[in-house]
Image 1 (cartoon, rainbow, N blue to C red):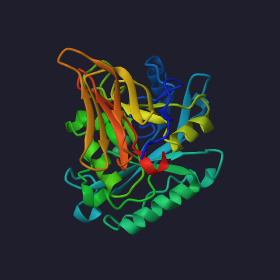
Image 2 (image 1 turned 180 degrees about the vertical axis):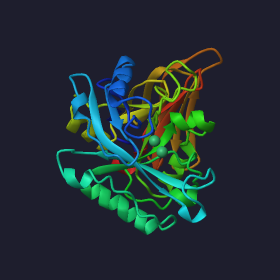
Image 3 (image 1 turned 60 degrees about the vertical axis):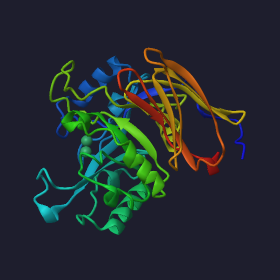
Image 4 (image 1 turned 60 degrees about the horizontal axis):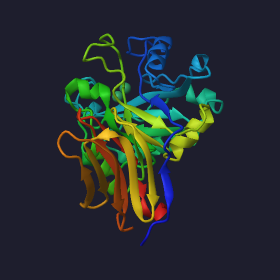
Length: 323
Ligand SMILES: [Zn+2]
Ligand SMILES: [Zn+2]
């Protein structure tokens, strides 16, 4: 089956975003204003403020080159096995991104948490459905740090995305990168996107190798820096995740998948099954473009690249039946 020509990701019009961030409102070191200042200086246009169980809309921070997304992070911890802070307790952390902060303000301000029923997937999915109805996009965060495995995340439903990379967790124990969890969630039938985030708390200063800012981000092809445009682009999957490399356009052309990127060593196309298309540079060289013949039998596929520093970037999964 030859796939029609289509632009999967544009070559420009992106805004750099950190969609996971903690401030002095919860357990972060920087004020919301301090976060804005630091991220703007690093070329970011968007930050989602996801303080723990503290829904906030920092519209006072918005200006012509910066947009604050209303959000919070909540959790469901396995209280059967301890008080909620033991290092071996499993926990679900979810980010909730508000699609329209002018709606349902009173209800959202309650920062509702999931019921304390760890292991009851039905009640957790009910919570996710309720939050969606209220206007949130729900993201499943850092499975590796949370000590979670397939049994904990395969049954989740109604998610918008999961965190394929969490920079703070990478610093905690080199457990920030979760491509396997993303693929397993896709293979369990979830049609979700993938985010790279900082989850910054900034407990050590900028410049220190353990500072947790500026390591995981998404580039959102919103066209215009306005709340609704950014949300529409997120819902449509018009973004890619990265630790550093920049994707410069992904398209289907004449039955081929064409990938353009900043210089990288490896370009892989991971699929629903075991097959994987790949192009690698010779040692010391770099690739900026690759073309792969598509069969139309891939089920879903996603592009992942790796540069000479070992940093990854990639697309969301594209489902062949929707192309
Ligand atoms: Zn978390
Ligand atoms: Zn967090």
